[in-house]
Image 1: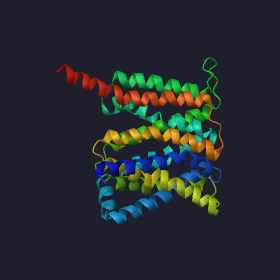
Image 2: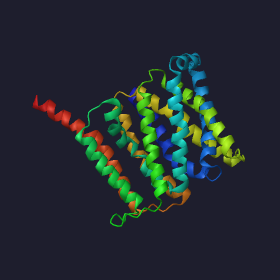
Image 3: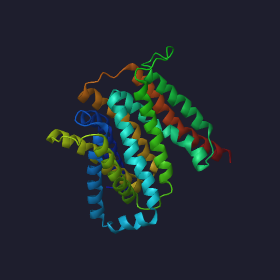
Image 4: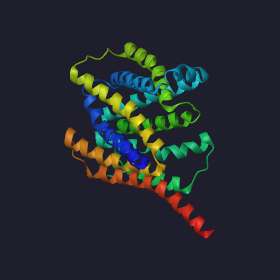
Length: 302
């Protein structure tokens, strides 16, 4: 197979797996509290990332990278997996999966807005337009389509869903300072966070009661949301001739996710969710498409 075919195969595999995790979150939260699920999933993800590094022959990089920037990994580990997934799982615990999923996609809209003050990047008009459109979609979802009344069905769940996007963006902004191997960096974040998660769990809640189904659900979240799928996506980007070819596959994920949510969880996909998610996805598309069109226009003028 040509390199581009492998890239698409890796990318489709990652997108398919990520499309199942919203459903997996709700199933796993039937067995665990949000904090317990963070603990179980972090352990599972750490194990699979460690095995991947063994296969890649990169174990020596773990201590080397940590010694170079230990405070960086303390920051990234605190944000991801600890705070980000704790807040995200709590949002999924309070909201229908379709709503929590839709809100989570706004992180890509928030990221360029935060990059202006934190990375001193210029704010583009495209980013503002995308933000207005995307957060209009959030209002549609949060109010169940009753925009005039502005009555939110679950304000705490909505707030947590949006807060999770802020935490994710902060993680990626801080992560721009990391020049090490990305798989090693992710594992280090998890290893640093695991004692903090464990201590918080021991002090505040009982340890989870494991059954075969509970263990499988928690391990699935760790493997296919946090661990293996991330590596699969990196392989897709690495082998792609054009990054855009792979990155555009992400737009398949919410559509597939809604199918899994409806088929497996039995949720009726509300019109407000469809309209709101459409606004968010259109905003993401404009964010990518308009700058590209402007560049082509400039080239033609020259």
